[in-house]
Length: 117
Image 1 (cartoon, one colour):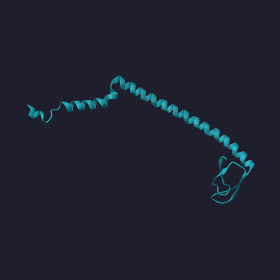
Image 2: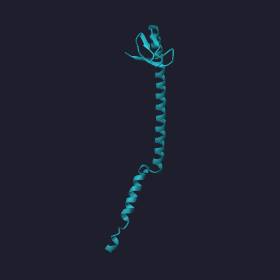
Image 3: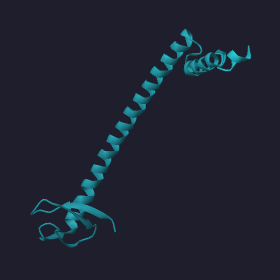
Image 4: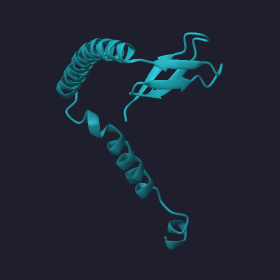
């Protein structure tokens, strides 16, 4: 059975009940709550419209998310294109610096080179 969430009319606490007509006891105030066929129909009817509303909100948020990601991607690509015009190897900058340091270390004479002469 599907579970639905209902507010207790006495204590206003939330209860999880099965989606069938029966009497249920509130877990907080221990009052008996009668879930009738009319209440079941109204919950189904209101649940339908709540579902439509949540779907519309989800669609709106999805469109906003896609627009923001497309915009940020465009800005990144624009920045990358501009950097590539200024310096074609800008993305390899750190690798070039590492190689430069390696080459500088390789060109330094070692301690034992002094004794070889």
